[in-house]
Length: 167
Picture 1 (cartoon, rainbow, N blue to C red):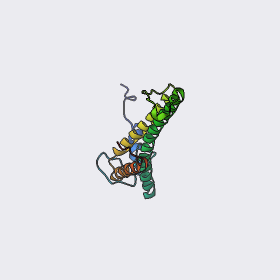
Picture 2: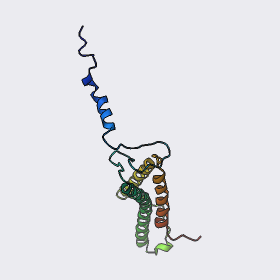
Picture 3: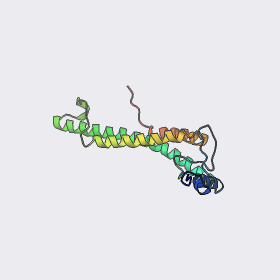
Picture 4: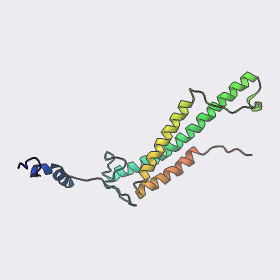
């Protein structure tokens, strides 16, 4: 009876042996699904975002704040683009009717087939950024979550500072 194909010789332990060898080769990612305050050797979203120093972690925190701010920038861009479309439509209707825009009764406006893809693209980018923010929050790193809150405060302060209508 030939057991050559079914025996587990020392050479076939390569995968497990390689894993054991990797343990002593250097820093590995610390990933926790519990609340943590890890800074060095943390990884976010992929192993390529491996924080190896305090400076890298500080840069990651600044990047998270900017990511959150970009989310509000995108939201504001959608709002401004919609206002632009409505202004353009209002002006076009006023020019056709010969009355000033303030006195026009404007029916509801539906974006054209060329305008809607831009609106959809802005929405998709906004959705993707929000999804990455959610993934970052799921690392339960206290510092990253604080940076998310700081970014939310700054984004509202900068991008929601607008004139309010008085009714």
